[in-house]
Structures are given as C-alpha cells and as structure tokens.
Image (cartoon, rainbow, N blue to C red):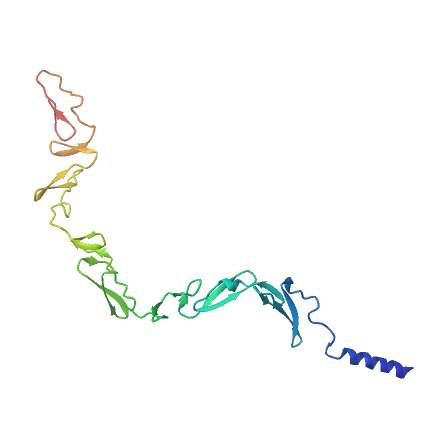
Length: 231
C-alpha cells in the first residue's frame, strides 16, 4: 500500500514538473481584445492587430502611425505619441533646426558667431567672441534694422532726408509747436485747440472780446495776448 502511494506521488510530480510546466502564461490575457497572446520563451506577449502596438500585455492604438518624424523616432504611451528628435533638430516632426543650430547641406549643425549673419542691413564680425554688426550707410541699431539719423524709411529702404527747415522741429514756444514749411524757411503755428492772439497762442473759446466788453461809442476791444483786453 505504501509503495503504491509513493508511486502515485512520483507520477504526479513528474506530470506537473518542478518548473511550473502546465501553467499557461496567457491565461486571462486578452490583449484588450485587439490582439492575441503568445508564449515566447515562457513569457506571455501580445501580438496586436494592425493599427495597434503592445505596451505590456495591452494593445494600444498606434499613435506613431500618423507621425512622420523626419529626423528622430516616435515614442508613445497609452495616450499619445511624439517625435523624439536627434541632436540639433526640433519641431513636432523634427523637421527644423533647434535653437543654436542652423541648416548646412541638409544637416543641422551648431551655430558659430556670425554663421547666420543676423545683421539685417550690414555685415557681421566677431568681436571678443560676440557678434557685432557694421551697418550699411543709412542704417542703425544693434541689428541694423532701423534708419540712422538723417535718414527715413521709404518702403523697406532708408533714404536720406531732404533739406527740411522743420527737421529738427525749431518751434518750441508754449502751445506753438507745429512747424510748417514756408518756402525755404518755416512758420510756427499754434497747437490744435489753440489760436493766435497778439503773437501768442491761447486756448480756443477764451476770447476776452467775445462778447464785446467795450460798450462805449467808438470803442473797440483788442486782446492783449495775456487773456485780457483793452478798449
């Protein structure tokens, strides 16, 4: 009897094995209903349908299928995919040079001072390792992108100013700063809201002679330029 029990135990041990043989690694794995489970080297793996990729034992939509990473590789998680760019490249599709790089024969290479010539209207030169712009005639500014004194913009070009008696504006009397050319010279006009009285610009609507305060026979009201009048 004891020999029979011992034999039965050995038989069961031999059938089950000591390494868990007979246990299906794919048991309970449904690959989120978008693939089939396969055992590879004793481990469960999901073989997903087209349009899905396996992340662990779950088949997720293949978000990378819609991303054409030009200079990088697509990586994704359960919710989205994105391009991981190679060094020097940037952009959603890794199709532009990253900051500090520029395009050279189809490759993004590190910038060197003046490589990209940032001077809009001038030439770049390196001073103590830094970019410095030498502006063309008529241009000024750190990047030579504005007109220099004595020049003005016409379209996209800075051209010399014509001789103009009103540049700079010589009119600096109180409320009389509007310069108007007069032949080769100029005249100073009153600012808006002011008018000329006795060679002074006074606010509109403050004429001391309106209404006429001079009521005597043969009297005429004359503003004195200081807000008063004489008859």
